[in-house]
Length: 114
Image (cartoon, rainbow, N blue to C red; front, side, top):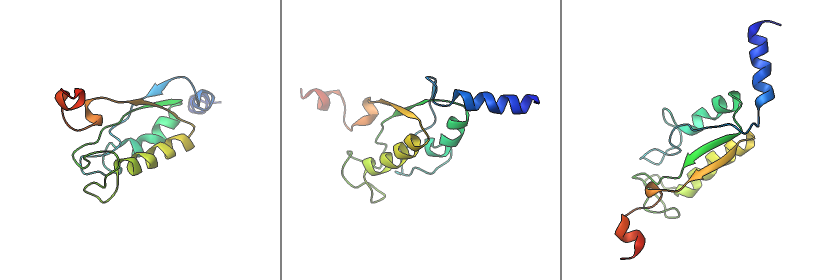
């Protein structure tokens, strides 16, 4: 077995591991999931690397004012994230979701109700 075959088989053994990776943004500021360096486009590489987890920052970007209203592309943020998460899960990847200041519009005063 040459070094390349050994490397390929070791990747197969690590699939579904407890190691994780973070790719790019899930959605662009234009609300798209297919753009250069998008997580959706990186899922095959993340799977081939043997990761068992991916880290996703749930961000709205400029296209969406919230998660359920239609954005600049006629879809909701939830619809776009659902596509990518479904693809990731079909590849055996688990999701670690991050909720932060990019996950909702406004600022600290809007979030605390002060």
